[in-house]
Length: 343
Ligand SMILES: CCC(=O)NCCNC(=O)CCNC(=O)[C@H](O)C(C)(C)COP(=O)(O)O
Image (cartoon, rainbow, N blue to C red; front, side, top):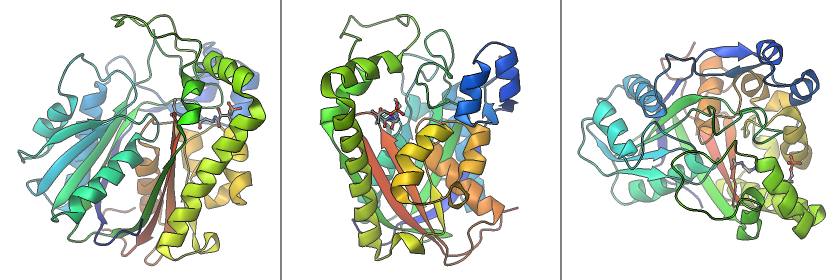
Protein backbone atom coordinates (compact mmCIF):
# COMPACT_ATOMS: atom_id res chain seq x y z
CA UNK A 1 0.00 0.00 0.00
CA UNK A 2 0.99 3.59 -0.61
CA UNK A 3 1.59 5.49 2.66
CA UNK A 4 0.69 9.14 3.18
CA UNK A 5 1.78 11.12 6.23
CA UNK A 6 3.85 8.25 7.69
CA UNK A 7 7.14 9.65 8.95
CA UNK A 8 10.08 8.31 10.92
CA UNK A 9 10.73 10.88 13.66
CA UNK A 10 13.20 8.98 15.82
CA UNK A 11 15.37 5.85 15.87
CA UNK A 12 17.27 4.20 18.70
CA UNK A 13 19.06 0.96 19.46
CA UNK A 14 20.58 -0.56 22.58
CA UNK A 15 23.06 -3.30 21.70
CA UNK A 16 25.36 -5.15 24.10
CA UNK A 17 29.04 -5.46 23.17
CA UNK A 18 29.80 -7.16 19.84
CA UNK A 19 31.79 -10.32 20.56
CA UNK A 20 34.35 -11.26 17.86
CA UNK A 21 33.43 -14.57 16.20
CA UNK A 22 36.92 -15.90 16.98
CA UNK A 23 35.99 -15.82 20.68
CA UNK A 24 32.86 -17.89 20.01
CA UNK A 25 34.99 -20.38 18.06
CA UNK A 26 37.60 -20.50 20.82
CA UNK A 27 34.85 -21.15 23.38
CA UNK A 28 33.41 -23.97 21.24
CA UNK A 29 30.10 -22.17 20.62
CA UNK A 30 30.57 -22.73 16.88
CA UNK A 31 33.06 -24.67 14.78
CA UNK A 32 35.54 -22.83 12.58
CA UNK A 33 33.96 -23.99 9.31
CA UNK A 34 30.44 -22.91 10.27
CA UNK A 35 31.73 -19.58 11.51
CA UNK A 36 33.54 -19.01 8.22
CA UNK A 37 30.43 -20.00 6.18
CA UNK A 38 28.37 -17.49 8.14
CA UNK A 39 30.66 -14.62 7.13
CA UNK A 40 29.94 -13.07 10.51
CA UNK A 41 32.67 -10.97 12.10
CA UNK A 42 31.06 -10.40 15.50
CA UNK A 43 27.72 -10.86 17.28
CA UNK A 44 26.13 -8.63 19.92
CA UNK A 45 25.81 -10.84 22.99
CA UNK A 46 24.44 -9.96 26.42
CA UNK A 47 26.94 -10.58 29.21
CA UNK A 48 25.82 -11.75 32.65
CA UNK A 49 25.07 -8.27 33.97
CA UNK A 50 23.03 -7.34 30.88
CA UNK A 51 19.52 -5.91 31.19
CA UNK A 52 16.48 -8.06 30.40
CA UNK A 53 15.07 -7.70 26.89
CA UNK A 54 12.25 -5.40 28.01
CA UNK A 55 14.83 -3.09 29.62
CA UNK A 56 16.86 -3.08 26.39
CA UNK A 57 13.72 -1.86 24.61
CA UNK A 58 13.31 0.88 27.23
CA UNK A 59 16.86 2.12 26.60
CA UNK A 60 16.37 2.09 22.83
CA UNK A 61 13.04 3.91 23.22
CA UNK A 62 14.59 6.61 25.40
CA UNK A 63 17.22 7.27 22.74
CA UNK A 64 14.64 7.41 19.93
CA UNK A 65 12.45 9.85 21.90
CA UNK A 66 15.40 12.07 22.85
CA UNK A 67 16.59 12.16 19.25
CA UNK A 68 13.05 13.13 18.19
CA UNK A 69 12.99 15.88 20.79
CA UNK A 70 9.89 14.59 22.57
CA UNK A 71 9.00 13.05 25.93
CA UNK A 72 6.58 10.67 24.26
CA UNK A 73 3.45 12.41 25.53
CA UNK A 74 2.02 12.43 21.97
CA UNK A 75 2.43 8.66 21.59
CA UNK A 76 -1.00 7.16 20.85
CA UNK A 77 0.11 3.54 20.85
CA UNK A 78 3.17 1.51 21.80
CA UNK A 79 3.85 -1.73 19.92
CA UNK A 80 6.51 -4.07 21.28
CA UNK A 81 7.67 -6.97 19.06
CA UNK A 82 9.78 -9.89 20.20
CA UNK A 83 10.43 -13.56 19.48
CA UNK A 84 11.80 -15.04 22.64
CA UNK A 85 11.57 -14.81 26.43
CA UNK A 86 11.30 -11.20 27.63
CA UNK A 87 12.45 -11.85 31.17
CA UNK A 88 9.16 -12.70 32.86
CA UNK A 89 6.01 -14.77 32.26
CA UNK A 90 2.36 -13.69 31.87
CA UNK A 91 3.38 -10.10 32.17
CA UNK A 92 2.56 -6.84 30.45
CA UNK A 93 5.89 -6.51 28.69
CA UNK A 94 4.65 -3.68 26.46
CA UNK A 95 3.25 -1.91 29.54
CA UNK A 96 6.67 -2.18 31.19
CA UNK A 97 8.29 -0.53 28.16
CA UNK A 98 5.50 2.07 28.14
CA UNK A 99 5.82 2.88 31.87
CA UNK A 100 9.58 3.25 31.58
CA UNK A 101 9.67 5.25 28.33
CA UNK A 102 6.60 7.35 27.43
CA UNK A 103 4.41 9.62 29.51
CA UNK A 104 1.25 8.59 27.70
CA UNK A 105 -1.58 6.40 28.89
CA UNK A 106 -1.99 4.95 25.40
CA UNK A 107 -2.62 1.28 24.50
CA UNK A 108 0.57 -0.74 24.80
CA UNK A 109 0.41 -3.94 22.79
CA UNK A 110 2.75 -6.82 21.96
CA UNK A 111 3.25 -7.95 18.37
CA UNK A 112 4.49 -11.43 17.53
CA UNK A 113 5.22 -12.28 13.92
CA UNK A 114 8.56 -13.98 14.55
CA UNK A 115 11.36 -12.21 12.68
CA UNK A 116 8.88 -10.03 10.78
CA UNK A 117 7.50 -8.63 14.03
CA UNK A 118 9.07 -5.19 13.67
CA UNK A 119 7.62 -4.74 10.19
CA UNK A 120 4.25 -6.14 11.34
CA UNK A 121 4.25 -3.42 14.01
CA UNK A 122 5.00 -0.85 11.29
CA UNK A 123 1.93 -2.11 9.39
CA UNK A 124 -0.27 -1.71 12.48
CA UNK A 125 1.20 1.72 13.23
CA UNK A 126 0.46 2.92 9.69
CA UNK A 127 -3.21 2.05 10.22
CA UNK A 128 -3.36 3.82 13.60
CA UNK A 129 -1.66 6.96 12.31
CA UNK A 130 -3.88 7.08 9.23
CA UNK A 131 -6.83 7.38 11.61
CA UNK A 132 -5.95 10.52 13.40
CA UNK A 133 -2.35 11.51 13.48
CA UNK A 134 -0.11 11.64 16.52
CA UNK A 135 2.79 9.25 17.13
CA UNK A 136 3.29 5.52 17.54
CA UNK A 137 6.36 4.04 19.24
CA UNK A 138 7.64 0.70 17.97
CA UNK A 139 10.09 -1.28 20.09
CA UNK A 140 11.75 -4.67 19.71
CA UNK A 141 14.03 -6.64 22.02
CA UNK A 142 15.36 -10.14 22.46
CA UNK A 143 18.06 -12.07 24.26
CA UNK A 144 18.63 -15.45 22.61
CA UNK A 145 20.21 -17.23 25.55
CA UNK A 146 20.70 -20.76 26.86
CA UNK A 147 19.36 -23.14 27.97
CA UNK A 148 16.55 -23.06 25.43
CA UNK A 149 18.31 -21.37 22.53
CA UNK A 150 21.69 -21.78 20.83
CA UNK A 151 22.39 -18.57 18.86
CA UNK A 152 24.70 -20.43 16.46
CA UNK A 153 22.99 -23.82 16.15
CA UNK A 154 19.24 -23.37 16.70
CA UNK A 155 18.75 -21.99 13.20
CA UNK A 156 21.94 -22.63 11.18
CA UNK A 157 22.39 -20.01 8.50
CA UNK A 158 21.24 -17.25 10.85
CA UNK A 159 23.29 -16.17 13.87
CA UNK A 160 21.04 -14.67 16.52
CA UNK A 161 22.06 -11.51 18.38
CA UNK A 162 20.83 -9.74 21.50
CA UNK A 163 19.60 -6.17 21.54
CA UNK A 164 16.74 -3.68 21.59
CA UNK A 165 15.51 -1.19 18.99
CA UNK A 166 12.96 1.63 18.81
CA UNK A 167 11.34 3.62 16.02
CA UNK A 168 9.11 6.65 16.64
CA UNK A 169 6.59 7.07 13.83
CA UNK A 170 4.64 10.30 13.37
CA UNK A 171 1.86 11.57 11.14
CA UNK A 172 3.13 15.11 11.62
CA UNK A 173 6.60 14.87 10.15
CA UNK A 174 10.09 13.46 10.59
CA UNK A 175 13.49 13.10 8.94
CA UNK A 176 12.27 10.26 6.73
CA UNK A 177 9.01 9.23 5.09
CA UNK A 178 7.65 5.73 4.60
CA UNK A 179 6.35 5.90 1.03
CA UNK A 180 4.96 2.37 0.79
CA UNK A 181 4.64 -0.82 2.75
CA UNK A 182 3.76 -4.31 1.50
CA UNK A 183 3.16 -7.39 3.66
CA UNK A 184 2.63 -10.79 1.98
CA UNK A 185 2.05 -14.14 3.69
CA UNK A 186 1.97 -17.81 2.72
CA UNK A 187 0.70 -20.04 5.57
CA UNK A 188 1.55 -23.19 3.61
CA UNK A 189 5.04 -22.73 5.04
CA UNK A 190 4.12 -22.51 8.72
CA UNK A 191 5.14 -26.11 9.36
CA UNK A 192 8.73 -25.32 8.46
CA UNK A 193 9.47 -23.93 11.91
CA UNK A 194 7.11 -26.29 13.77
CA UNK A 195 7.17 -29.81 12.36
CA UNK A 196 8.85 -32.37 14.51
CA UNK A 197 7.98 -30.50 17.66
CA UNK A 198 4.45 -31.70 18.45
CA UNK A 199 2.09 -29.44 20.34
CA UNK A 200 2.61 -30.10 24.01
CA UNK A 201 1.57 -28.95 27.43
CA UNK A 202 2.44 -25.42 28.47
CA UNK A 203 6.15 -25.59 29.09
CA UNK A 204 7.61 -23.96 32.14
CA UNK A 205 11.12 -25.02 31.24
CA UNK A 206 12.34 -25.24 27.64
CA UNK A 207 12.15 -28.77 26.20
CA UNK A 208 15.88 -28.94 25.38
CA UNK A 209 17.52 -26.57 22.92
CA UNK A 210 15.32 -25.26 20.10
CA UNK A 211 16.32 -27.02 16.87
CA UNK A 212 14.71 -25.19 13.94
CA UNK A 213 16.98 -27.01 11.52
CA UNK A 214 15.42 -30.35 12.51
CA UNK A 215 11.93 -28.86 12.09
CA UNK A 216 12.85 -27.46 8.69
CA UNK A 217 14.33 -30.81 7.54
CA UNK A 218 11.16 -32.71 8.50
CA UNK A 219 8.99 -30.15 6.72
CA UNK A 220 11.12 -30.09 3.57
CA UNK A 221 11.30 -33.89 3.51
CA UNK A 222 7.51 -33.90 3.24
CA UNK A 223 6.83 -30.75 1.22
CA UNK A 224 9.94 -30.88 -0.97
CA UNK A 225 12.82 -28.42 -1.18
CA UNK A 226 11.88 -27.11 -4.64
CA UNK A 227 8.32 -26.41 -3.40
CA UNK A 228 9.69 -24.65 -0.30
CA UNK A 229 12.27 -22.58 -2.14
CA UNK A 230 9.73 -21.64 -4.83
CA UNK A 231 7.20 -20.43 -2.24
CA UNK A 232 9.80 -18.54 -0.19
CA UNK A 233 11.14 -16.89 -3.34
CA UNK A 234 7.67 -15.99 -4.60
CA UNK A 235 6.54 -14.43 -1.31
CA UNK A 236 9.55 -12.17 -1.02
CA UNK A 237 9.37 -11.22 -4.70
CA UNK A 238 5.69 -10.25 -4.37
CA UNK A 239 6.36 -8.07 -1.32
CA UNK A 240 9.22 -6.20 -3.02
CA UNK A 241 7.30 -5.80 -6.28
CA UNK A 242 4.23 -4.40 -4.49
CA UNK A 243 6.21 -1.96 -2.32
CA UNK A 244 8.26 -0.59 -5.24
CA UNK A 245 5.15 -0.19 -7.41
CA UNK A 246 3.18 1.54 -4.64
CA UNK A 247 6.10 3.93 -4.09
CA UNK A 248 6.29 4.60 -7.81
CA UNK A 249 9.96 3.60 -8.02
CA UNK A 250 12.11 0.89 -9.56
CA UNK A 251 14.70 -1.31 -7.84
CA UNK A 252 17.40 0.73 -9.58
CA UNK A 253 16.18 3.84 -7.71
CA UNK A 254 16.96 2.24 -4.34
CA UNK A 255 20.36 3.28 -3.01
CA UNK A 256 20.44 0.97 0.04
CA UNK A 257 18.65 -2.26 0.99
CA UNK A 258 18.13 -3.03 4.69
CA UNK A 259 17.96 -6.82 4.62
CA UNK A 260 17.26 -9.45 7.32
CA UNK A 261 20.44 -10.14 9.27
CA UNK A 262 21.04 -13.57 7.75
CA UNK A 263 24.43 -15.26 7.57
CA UNK A 264 26.22 -14.72 4.26
CA UNK A 265 25.03 -17.89 2.52
CA UNK A 266 21.37 -17.27 3.30
CA UNK A 267 21.78 -13.62 2.37
CA UNK A 268 23.18 -14.64 -1.02
CA UNK A 269 20.54 -17.28 -1.78
CA UNK A 270 17.52 -15.51 -0.29
CA UNK A 271 18.25 -11.86 -1.05
CA UNK A 272 21.30 -10.82 -3.06
CA UNK A 273 20.80 -13.20 -5.99
CA UNK A 274 16.98 -12.87 -6.26
CA UNK A 275 17.27 -9.06 -6.00
CA UNK A 276 20.29 -8.87 -8.31
CA UNK A 277 22.22 -6.61 -5.94
CA UNK A 278 25.69 -6.70 -4.41
CA UNK A 279 26.32 -6.76 -0.67
CA UNK A 280 27.74 -3.24 -0.94
CA UNK A 281 24.19 -1.93 -1.61
CA UNK A 282 22.95 -3.51 1.63
CA UNK A 283 23.54 -3.34 5.37
CA UNK A 284 25.70 -6.50 5.28
CA UNK A 285 28.80 -4.63 6.51
CA UNK A 286 26.74 -3.69 9.60
CA UNK A 287 24.73 -6.89 10.04
CA UNK A 288 27.88 -9.05 9.79
CA UNK A 289 29.08 -7.27 12.94
CA UNK A 290 25.76 -7.53 14.82
CA UNK A 291 23.76 -10.68 13.92
CA UNK A 292 20.02 -11.31 13.71
CA UNK A 293 18.17 -9.04 16.18
CA UNK A 294 14.92 -10.97 15.85
CA UNK A 295 12.25 -8.34 15.06
CA UNK A 296 14.71 -5.43 15.14
CA UNK A 297 16.94 -5.83 12.07
CA UNK A 298 15.12 -3.21 10.01
CA UNK A 299 15.18 -0.44 12.65
CA UNK A 300 18.80 -1.14 13.54
CA UNK A 301 19.79 -1.23 9.87
CA UNK A 302 18.02 2.05 9.09
CA UNK A 303 19.63 3.73 12.10
CA UNK A 304 23.03 2.49 10.90
CA UNK A 305 22.50 3.88 7.39
CA UNK A 306 21.36 7.27 8.70
CA UNK A 307 24.16 7.58 11.28
CA UNK A 308 26.84 6.49 8.81
CA UNK A 309 25.77 9.08 6.22
CA UNK A 310 25.17 6.35 3.64
CA UNK A 311 21.77 7.91 2.98
CA UNK A 312 21.28 11.62 2.38
CA UNK A 313 18.27 13.80 1.57
CA UNK A 314 16.32 12.28 -1.32
CA UNK A 315 17.97 8.90 -0.77
CA UNK A 316 15.67 5.90 -1.04
CA UNK A 317 16.10 2.71 0.96
CA UNK A 318 14.09 -0.46 1.31
CA UNK A 319 13.40 -2.23 4.61
CA UNK A 320 12.82 -5.96 4.09
CA UNK A 321 11.65 -8.46 6.64
CA UNK A 322 10.67 -12.14 6.72
CA UNK A 323 9.03 -14.11 9.50
CA UNK A 324 8.36 -17.79 9.97
CA UNK A 325 4.88 -18.56 8.78
CA UNK A 326 5.93 -17.18 6.38
CA UNK A 327 5.28 -13.48 6.12
CA UNK A 328 7.40 -11.13 4.02
CA UNK A 329 7.40 -7.35 4.23
CA UNK A 330 8.95 -4.53 2.27
CA UNK A 331 8.86 -0.78 2.87
CA UNK A 332 10.26 2.04 0.73
CA UNK A 333 11.67 4.85 2.88
CA UNK A 334 12.78 8.26 1.61
CA UNK A 335 15.26 10.31 3.63
CA UNK A 336 13.99 13.92 3.77
CA UNK A 337 16.80 15.46 5.82
CA UNK A 338 19.83 14.37 7.79
CA UNK A 339 18.82 14.39 11.50
CA UNK A 340 21.02 16.26 13.90
CA UNK A 341 22.07 13.13 15.81
CA UNK A 342 23.99 11.50 12.95
CA UNK A 343 27.74 11.00 13.17
C1 LIG B 1 12.38 -18.21 13.24
C2 LIG B 1 12.88 -16.85 12.92
C3 LIG B 1 12.29 -16.35 11.65
O1 LIG B 1 11.16 -15.89 11.61
N1 LIG B 1 13.05 -16.45 10.51
C4 LIG B 1 12.53 -16.01 9.22
C5 LIG B 1 12.19 -17.25 8.39
N2 LIG B 1 13.44 -17.94 8.06
C6 LIG B 1 14.14 -17.65 6.94
O2 LIG B 1 13.71 -16.88 6.11
C7 LIG B 1 15.51 -18.32 6.81
C8 LIG B 1 15.76 -18.87 5.41
N3 LIG B 1 15.03 -20.14 5.23
C9 LIG B 1 14.41 -20.41 4.09
O3 LIG B 1 14.35 -19.62 3.21
C10 LIG B 1 13.73 -21.76 3.96
O4 LIG B 1 13.83 -22.39 5.20
C11 LIG B 1 14.36 -22.67 2.90
C12 LIG B 1 14.49 -21.96 1.59
C13 LIG B 1 13.50 -23.85 2.80
C14 LIG B 1 15.73 -23.22 3.32
O5 LIG B 1 16.64 -22.23 3.51
P1 LIG B 1 18.03 -22.62 4.23
O6 LIG B 1 17.71 -23.16 5.59
O7 LIG B 1 18.71 -23.66 3.38
O8 LIG B 1 18.79 -21.33 4.30
